Image (tube, rainbow, N blue to C red; front, top):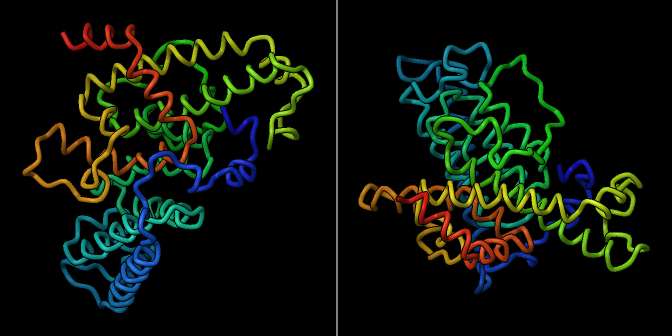
Length: 323
């Protein structure tokens, strides 16, 4: 996994909004407007929380709702009096997504995890957002561990810390049943990031034996140097086959997604889809809003999508899969 070779500090140091590709985030200097939106959402959320903490409790609003001993803790969405708070917290996350800084990404992650803790049933779909947020934070290994843990049954006794993202099968063994598309898209991006790094490192090692990868000098061991130098092409081909499998599989689930990821419209990224939108396009917008930033903030990721889009063999697989 990427984080076996790159420290979190280096990953975050490499995270820059100005390195994004085709990002629809502030072409006219609207960053202050976004920050104002965050402030407004946070103020509203804090006011609701203060009121709830002071609430004596009734049928719709349990007392001490944020305490672990509360009857509502872990199932907040069941209580109508607590839903406005959860909606307000989700609105704050949406506002944080508009500002592409490490601190905003970290805040969005913290809120998402806490919302999932407050409401284990996850009625607002926070679990679908978290993998992509982890990738935005440079937490590739944690993202992969989390996805495996979720789809292996969420067993509290199961501790996954250093799972191997280079599976030898085209699709990971835990991708069974109806996996959320947002998880598939995040997992594919994780593999795309690995492919980009492997291609770059392998090409540089072939060009000169004295090359030291920028940012990674202190984190790539001699053994890993040797692996990239002598097996980089083989490993890159393995990853490419896995990425193609994901690409075809996701296209079979939603034919709009990959095109929209490359050429998103404003509404795709900013407007909550309503029931008036077709099911396929509505799902596409939801997934796009959950995962687009992670793709846009990964230099080279869209190039890999274009490569897939223009590959005749991939198109042929899609046609066969669609029959």
